[in-house]
Image (cartoon, one colour):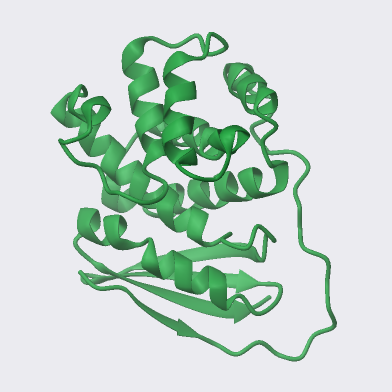
Length: 221
């Protein structure tokens, strides 16, 4: 399915500082403490990471009628979002693959092999190539787990695109679903053409998984 975008031109507004959330709402969850320890050990970018996590969870919750995934899958999405950019510790090139390697190998995470593969795969597919059976880590998963990875990665890709400039421009999203479209309404602090373009470009997996085109509506907060 194709994705399209419509945007409402923003009203004239005085320049504002970007929202950079210092804490994530789930930060005190004891099950996430090892995830934060790994992220912190990799000097993760707090503002961008928390913004992508927030947007991914909003999309997950608002699209529940389509995917019907449970709280365990939501937790995996949270972990993957918090760790998706830890590969930057070794540089930008291939950082999505580096994130997968860290998740598979880090002694800080008290997870078994399956959990590492699922979370690592979601993080790995936040950019570049889509899930494919040519990738060993993906092939190692069961068919059911591979489907979860595809759905959750599709959500992650759009959430990451919505913070492409790392300026936390998107204040809120409200998603509507029709028989042939997913309409993601974004309330923004300023212009945001880069985020709109990237979210559109990265909506490919979401379109494929849900069998609907994606439309992004961009309106000033």
